[in-house]
Length: 312
Image (tube, rainbow, N blue to C red; front, side, top):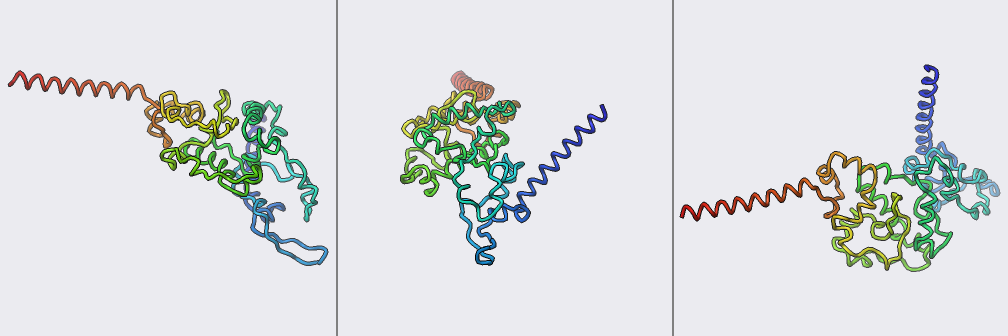
């Protein structure tokens, strides 16, 4: 029994130290062959043909954020776990750039250890989306979820504003970036402010509500719907969110971590929720208390009036 306990503790300690060392490994580009080039604005290499040391600017789309990389869900992987080992030599062979990128299901599909994440169902829903209908197989998971830096914020954060900010940045990284937008669209990037000019208090909505709340079809059983609807089907009815049966209860507020936080009571959940939207929460206790106060006020006014009349 003691031996098993010692072995278990040793494994946990080893994994912890290894995870920490890997994170530090990515945070120190000088100790990583790939990041020596792919973490800076410029890179240096030896030109064997001319026998010279040369320095060139790195393509901005190939510059990696080492901090985000260390915090991402794939931070335990090395670059060559997903990329060809042939990339270790420079200049990289041109045919390598034509290889198809690994998709989420290539690793996570059919794996029981990831069953709770429902990758297959997400794939089915994403293929119904307007993105897939228009761009087909060219629109992969990586268009929104960078394999390098993706973090499961919705599952791990207890801060609604952080979840909203992270999610919206994924959408805006393309829809607010003309260069990336043209990679898949081929037409002019719409002006988001003008497109949403019907929305009152735009800034508040963009800060407190995710884009996908209005632009996806809610699917039971999935934490996040991946069926992005065409713009004609976007939600524009205020009552759908600002009501007792708000659609936000089936999307933004259905995360388990938020539900656990609200186990202490609806009253505390309302006060602690920085992204509270009118109509998405109603406390039965506060509702009853407000009715009692209102009735007590009426009784007080009536009693006062009656005594004034009798005294007069």
